[in-house]
Length: 191
Image 1 (cartoon, rainbow, N blue to C red):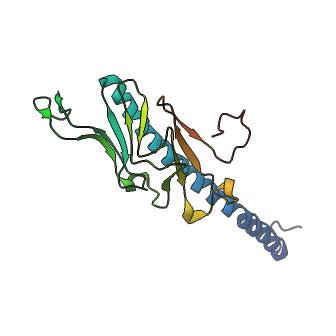
Image 2: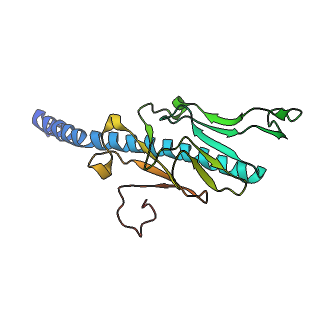
Image 3: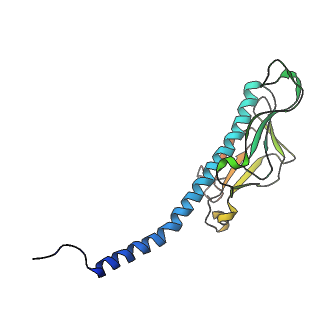
């Protein structure tokens, strides 16, 4: 008569194999979560920029996008002072001061370690005109943000484990996410 089950040695070998697999897999899963949080933050930030542009085009007027505070994931979409226009919040009054029409607090992204920097010349805000064209106040002809997570390491293009993303904004107002680690210019993710 045979008894069913495992011997102690078989159980120990099985546990050792599981332990090795976990030790190898956990860092990969952590990197995947870090990269997913970074991509979500970059997408939310670029959505704010696209919203500002769409408001400029639909209202045929200048709309600003600015980081609030600088260097964070927080942002504001602002209608600048214009005594000839009404407030969005109260159409019975004229817009005698800048009006914030949408904002996102820096902590809303859920990842306090994600930061926003500039690629190239820094600028204070983006002004979209009624045609959707972008002007980078205090900056150059084009604007580009770098979304990174320095707490978890350097970007892939600098030899680190974090897949950082750039948000490129053209003078024409086109906003797109791109990956600075992609070197093939035929790849649509290329910056």
